[in-house]
Length: 480
Image 1 (cartoon, one colour):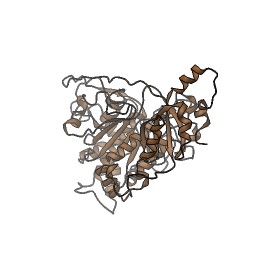
Image 2 (tube, helix red, strand yellow; image 1 turned 60 degrees about the vertical axis):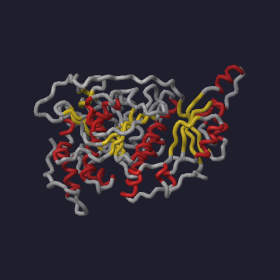
Image 3 (tube, helix red, strand yellow; image 1 turned 90 degrees about the horizontal axis):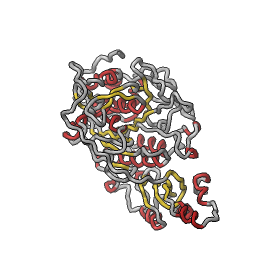
């Protein structure tokens, strides 16, 4: 059977009212359609330039990762056949050989009957597109008092707690690392002076919105703005992030108007876009457990790293040489309690939250996964941390694993800058190996609180290779 019964039940219902039937026939819905193969593809494994950037190809070559059929886009012939049935292709997935389509629900049986279609799943419905909210922030309207002698300003504690300042003092700020941020919107990023250095240095890459299918990502939500600020803000004395020297791509995958599984499809498309750009690190402060349509809800048993297309894609991204940092979730005080999706992915680096006493923040979601794996992997400050205000040139406060993840992701970028010859697996292993609970990981904080000074020392001391032009190895300082 090519479609899940409860998702497509409406396709089989018979109604007596002809008027009602006509209305149902015209109802547009989103479906995730997977294909049986990539037959007759015009794309070639030995000519990846048509679907991957030069940087993405270079990443694969660097780590000896072969370009395979998995990297090829879905067959254009299959997409054309869907369009002939009245479908609009919203986006497609190379890795999962699938497409998200918008089509009247009355036609979905015809789609399911196509010989090259494997599965069809209803994932949501379209909203009317909103006009972009324009934000104008004057560069001279700094409302936060600068802190004398505090380079990181109000962000000082969240960086020092992870010993991230050691990496910065050694000269590693994320330079040369491309970091993609998947989120729900980035209001003000293109105008807020906290991000001026990104604009001035050409380190703000082309944004993309996979929700509405355009380039307008600086809209819809301030969540992505705050997330980005914990890494990229660069106003000494007020707020400096964990990776002020990195290059960033703002990718909108979350639809703030509702919660449906199509957001996981957006997430997959956004992650593959990050891959095609050549991103090294991805931060995702998003998670999925329950939805507006309760029949889409996940159960704890689905936290197996295989039940969601997002979790599957996160693991593939790692195998392509990337590091995917994701928030564990904010359900620790709720009835659900558990981590969300895609934090359950085996190869995603899932981050829980601590407060500034070093204890788990009460809201931080708990592991393990349904199949018994340790999650979250690690923990970082996420309660009452400093973030940038999207509407004014000032620092403000926020809480959530949404901020713990990027605070850590920025320092991951700095550590990788220091050791570019180390693989994604070696970088993450060093972080876990030198964290506070390395020898006794649990389901609250995973391997514990990272110490990036110790992680640097651990990698520096390895005998196989050293960073190019590396400074003298620092003493591994104790946790403050």
